[in-house]
Length: 353
Image (cartoon, rainbow, N blue to C red):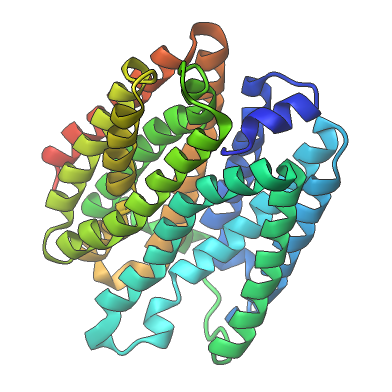
């Protein structure tokens, strides 16, 4: 998202079309993640994570070398496959590597990685693009994939699969009322956030005083706020996932709605991004905590399905956001994203885990 504008320019497509690369990744990742327990078969979890982290690295190399949007999109398909398997299996590792007494903290730590990665990725990508171009940013992600694969090999024990779930077990989480509510809340948060945030850079570029360097700094501030927010919202999630989500959703909606009206005022832009970033940084932890409280007996299957819901919502949000952005501009997409998140707030307020 932080390098969307230069990618669109280099591959000679509109920003909205370039945004569909997120849609492609999200759709593939959603399908793969939802069915990950079946697709993974009996392959050792550690080996599985290593293989698909290496595929992730290779797919980013392919994207970095792309000279057309078609090749770039093909790379995004492979990235989606990798994301779906890695995210679903990493999210379900908690019960395998933690004592029951520490499971809550373990799951929070795992999903903190998701939150921190998502909020730091955009400003880091934007900074690398400013220094060395968008292809350099993708090369950096490829290297991180390799590093992650090495760490998986060094840090995790062998994790053989003792039971291969059938297709009927994949959709079991949807039968639980509280878990199902968590899925709907997650979908609304992520669709609203990504509809708006995918196009945050072109919106900020409309500001009279917003240079490329200032935008990179602003996005870095967003990321840092997200890291702090991850632990802030995470600490509340331990006690009350519902309260944590109500606080986070209200702040995300407010930040997104404010941005288009303050783009010419640097400090107000920073304030809005801090509010938005801090709130969104804890969403991964809070939504996982909701599902864990709703039904602690199906953590593995609900984590896989949550990954699918999350990535499908990224796809829908970025795709619809691209259509709205190209047709109506940045103000409408920011306000539209805020409205969707507010609908999620209402669902959260009227539901129980």
